Length: 367
Ligand SMILES: [Mg+2]
Image (cartoon, rainbow, N blue to C red):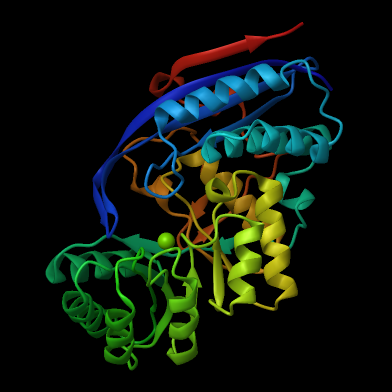
């Protein structure tokens, strides 16, 4: 089935409240929706969520790569995902752009084969439980938000830390006190601590039943992370240190983590994300599926990925819930669960998309 048209739309949606992490504060979710149409009339969708701090791309470089990929791929036959993914990788450039194109092609691939994407990716289950992330804020605000999330039905909280070790510990103690012992708490320092600070925090929070510590040290300090892992009773999860399968192999070789956080945007393609997942499975360690600032399309791809594979043990797919508006009018949440749609591919159609939020940036056609 040949690709007839590739269109790219930009969006910039406000978040319900500013989201602060150790690397900076976001007030909007900006990105691109990719729409790929085949000659047979099937349509696949993908989403790019660029990030200068984590992915090294931005709206401008992402659009450049999307334009190159649209020119490269229009007119191509969707016969082999292996071949298409190799061509995407060869173009290089912005990881989030490559991911959006890969996502739209996998969506089409599943639609061609008339199955929901998660079934083609392995079909392990039809729903997964997500956490909800609390950004860095004061103790009182953190506790209030934690209590309101638990009241809404979330059973796992991911708390952002990494700005000030002493305040981090105080906030975590206050949250554990407030929510009791039935709620899971995982924390993410986004590279914010030094080795000594991380060790001090781990010692201070060892009785708080913290499920995971994500990226306590800078991404490139794998030796420090390995040392920390050897001394920590709390499992260490790597996020910014592991973008692709090569990074996963190195991290595992150095024994630098207990869990890997896979993000489709970091992997820059669904195929690369699958490679990381299978490497983790072979190494007998679990993975998390996380997200950048994606809206519904990227999050739905993440849900499908998580539902495809049992090695995805932890799920952090909440970014779309933080935005003021919805890119796609479909429901994929029943707190605390997220579920894929039952129709082929990602499962939604043109009519479900809120085109009012979108501005057309690129359109490449070939008949
Ligand atoms: Mg993280």
